[in-house]
Length: 262
Image (cartoon, rainbow, N blue to C red; front, side):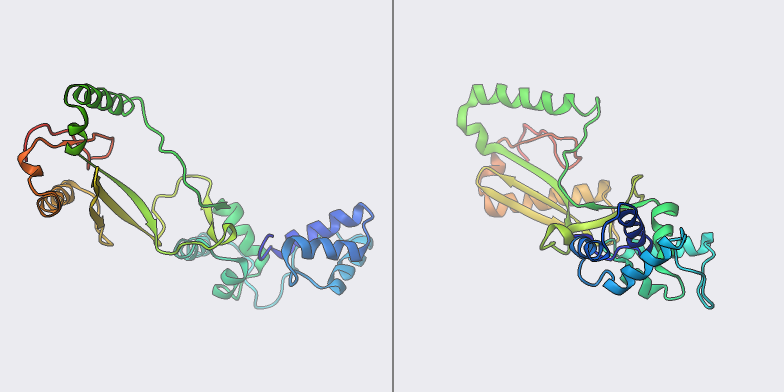
């Protein structure tokens, strides 16, 4: 089901089905099936069919007094700022923020001017460059060599870590997980996400750390995280620091290879 469609979109569907000689009642039934019960009344469907049969071709709202219809750079920037604060907005929610602008104009702004498209959030594999690809291969060969020499004892010396973006809100359904995204890569991340870093070994999780809002990953943060991992190993894996500890190397700066005691 498509929630909160633009009025012009619904009228286009009515005009299309009317040309195909679909009866008004059936047109209304199909609209309700796709867009929901509150999309349009049966009477409005018949009204638009009469207008189309009389030669009307315009599916947009007529200009009204007090309604802002001129799209300018300032308006586009303001709409974009509002969208970035909540990417799961609906047309009705956006219309409440800009009551002086018609839904049709708002739809034109975020689709044609800002190039937003509604996508469903999902996990995607990380794309590695040609420079990154040899590093995990080299690390894997190093680990295989040490495992063949030391056996299962080597697995007890491995500490690894990884980071990911965690959403503040967990969607309950696919429809709720959908967000408006621009076709080009956005320059900033959604305000509803926070960076989470996890370190673990064979026995379980050693450290879970969340990046404070407003801070960025840099050398100082890396060093502080490594110091926290060291303290976690001291507290949770007594005696491990007196042995050689190997850390799985990845493309992330959090991961390294260290074959000497800490």
